[in-house]
Length: 288
Image 1 (cartoon, one colour):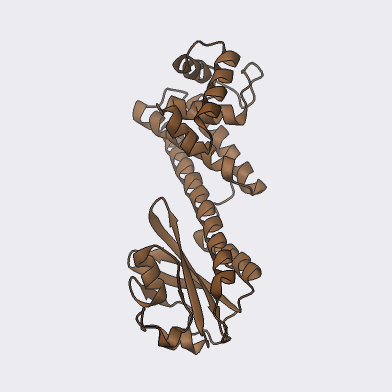
Image 2: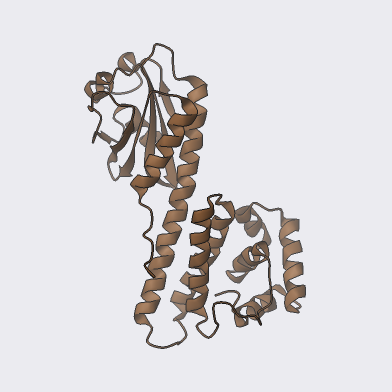
């Protein structure tokens, strides 16, 4: 069976712009993937002249460059006359007849990944009505990029493990710990993913990581105890040595809810403590 390729950043950017334009009703939306020194416009919707295609916006230059530098949304209602930005890109922007322009950053794990823009050619400013859809589109793009990153890391680790594996042997401790961290991260991300197709792909990767950690178990072992998805999420972080407060914050739960899940896990596995429950879960092939 041929493995599906991971969706590219550029495809995710196109999807985000399509949704942004649909929600905002703006005549022009565009965006680009961030690089070390700025962002290059790679996707446009509603362009008339083509002057913005491939435009390289450098950090601190223009509206987008200011967004990259300050890491927060920016809006100018009179682009050509604005004194708060440099005008390096006037020819391209004004060539499209843009009067008002907004830009919203997309960050993942503290790293700048993309910038979304929305432009208005009419005299009316963009305003809050369009900023809200832009921020929502940016948030959704952020989630999808984070999920994509996790998928790629998991695949890379799985491929490294397969390449080094000639027969079922225990993984080196350092590699096993990385695998366990990736597994916990994948489960946390999966809980926030609403796209059914993407969620299914993440779950397949989780099973793949379990198979690497426990080659002695089949994909569907009927003898394994059954834990709920959230119980596995909580126990996965316990296995990494996390405290209840940190687990609650990572999963968006209260500490009392985390304690409740742990109590249920210990009861199902017949173990007196959280550490014993982790050991039992690993022996049963429920955790890597």
